[in-house]
Every structure is written in structure tokens, then in C-alpha cells.
Image (cartoon, rainbow, N blue to C red; front, side, top):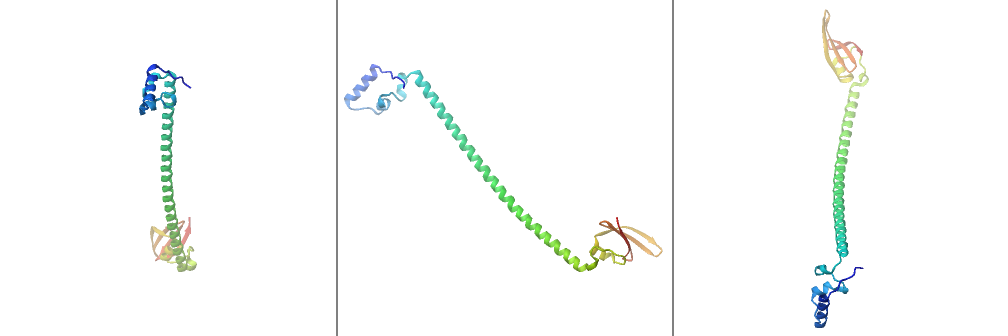
Length: 179
């Protein structure tokens, strides 16, 4: 514990205050518990006491700064978590919407396929000679006209589709093959 330096002026003020029975609040604050405290005591302090107070003030300032940084970091982490949760919720909603759209598209494709199979019967994906080209387009594959040849008996048109070709005369398949 630091030693206090007492001088005659301080003792005289103390004694006068005790004798008068009136202690000024500032005086009482300076000399609480027999220790000199407060701004007016600087001339009665040792350099070690000043150094201790400076170190204590620095420690308190560092602790306060660390607490502020920790609070700012905690706030930042909370905001990041909030943004991440919002993004995850939005992505989950988009995933649900996309899954529903995919199911509707698959259901629609399955319905179209079932209707096509019902309409085509045994001709579905089974080309044969004598089939009309319009039925080939509906029941076998989508085709496009790639060539026409003029012959003595008529015009032969060549249609190509997915992995197959069709030679057609007068709208009827006369030969076909796959490639």
C-alpha cells in the first residue's frame, strides 16, 4: 500500500474542519478513510501511484475497447446469420417452386405421351412401309424434308428424323432405314 505524504497544511485543514464540525464535501472526498483521493491530491502522490493509475486506466480502456469490438463482432455475426437464413429460406422456396414446376412438366409430358401411344397404337415408334408420312411425324419421330428426286414413276422425297430416314412417294413411305 502506498505511503501517504502528510504535511502541516493538510493537517491544519483537517483539524480546522473537525473543530468546526463542518466538513466540506470536496475535503471529505479527498480524505476518505485517511487516504488522499481525487484531483487535489496530485501533489501528495508518489510517482509509483501515478504509474499504477495510468496502467489501470490503460487496462480499463483496453478492456472497454475489447468489449466494444466483441459486441460489434457479435452484432455482425448475428446480421450475417440473419442474411444467411433469409437466403436459405428464399432458396428453399425457389427449390419447392422448381420441384412443383418439374412435376407439372413431367405430368404434362406423361399425359402427352400416353395420348400419343393411345392414338398411335402399334405404330408408336415402329415405322413400316406403307405408312403415311403424317403418321410417321406423329407416331414415330419428327422428320424434315432433306431431298427430292424426280423419277419416271413420280417424285421420291427423303425425310430424316432422329436416327432414321424415310423415302416417300405420294405421301406414303416406300422404304426406310436407320443410321
